[in-house]
Length: 300
View 1 (tube, rainbow, N blue to C red):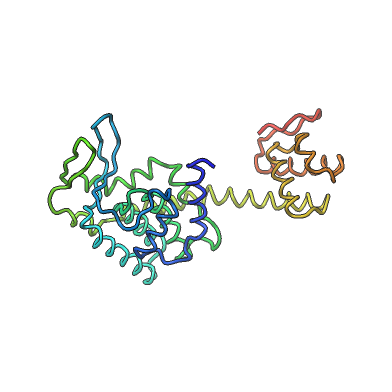
View 2: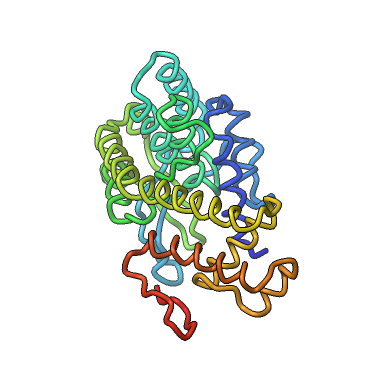
């Protein structure tokens, strides 16, 4: 498995646990970060160095987008943020508001060298699940919507980061090491996250209108197809799911090689099952062309 695939798999596995544990302690956050990142970059504590979010423009040239708090200010700021998140959850504040404070508050403090963005998105899911805003046992795909609407997502992040970056004075040496001048903790202590909460409401609305509707339609169609296949042959669940998946991959048809995986089925049964899956595909995509009379593949 490639590194990016492992990273995605770890994040999806973590999302399945959203809402089930207390995430707003230093120990819990470090455990979450260790799950998300490569073990070589796992943290044993909050960062003890100055980091920044930037873009390389070439050797010894950086475009700085955001300067997080100084490492010496981080413990008190993190403690304040964690206390606030716990109070919001216990006080019955709207889950979307709590999620905005948890997720965006964390990413603005940037407590780790790696994994801040993924941890920020996980906390959005966690707060929504813990507040019973999203259905139990379902990964509510709001972070996928955010990443697909990257300009809107970046704009929400930049509302705070832009203001802070204008206030912070720093030096960056030729090794990329940053030194922040003066007292800056006050710039991070009481962030106004109104714009981020509003943006999150918008992302959730888009998720409900697109992602969730499409997912429910998909599940409904496939449940119908599954029942239809079982009416032809009462197969074991795993065999039925395999046939359905392979038939979908073939756009409603089993290739010769895949057909050989089901020697117990007659040709007539296979054709009947293919017809059921083809009907499911057309229901999902009404513009799909029907299989031609000569047995050509369905065009989607």
